[in-house]
Image (cartoon, rainbow, N blue to C red; front, top):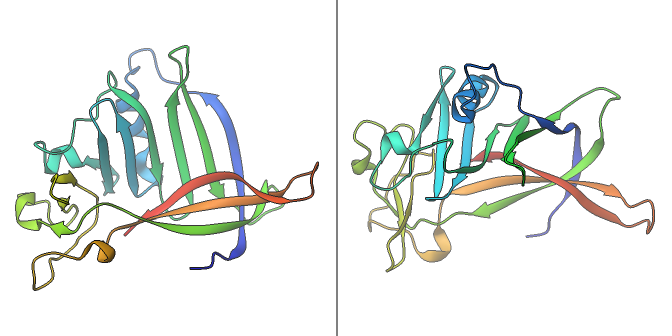
Length: 203
């Protein structure tokens, strides 16, 4: 499918150290305290991927819904995390010195915009067999998705119902992660290139 450049003015706050109170230095606690303006979480840890959904201002993780599949969101094993929604993304990552840093990209309507245009791209996520019955009360937020003979599994924060045949074909994988790529003209070459990207939604 041909990608289209569209108007998406946005402003970026470049890498900033995470500011936490002395008694609240756990980065996971910090993340949960900043989730109110976002809808979803995607975190990468030493044990694997953790998804999350913000419900009534509180962050619920895929580990709570399916602990046998999703690792726990822990400061000791966290590499990076993205809180994101339709209008903004907050990226948190650890640098080589062990310091946590943040970067925010958010929509803007004013002259402060760092970028004016972007390309939205839907990434197909793993999962051909939804197992909502395994969610034990979380089926209105998460769906356990498995894929392939290896049994690859993850728990994205979407509601997916199994078709009549019980599974989707490989080319039908239903879960999508929308990524917005901001574009700008390179001052040296004059070519338009992608200068930054953020997550927008999972559906």
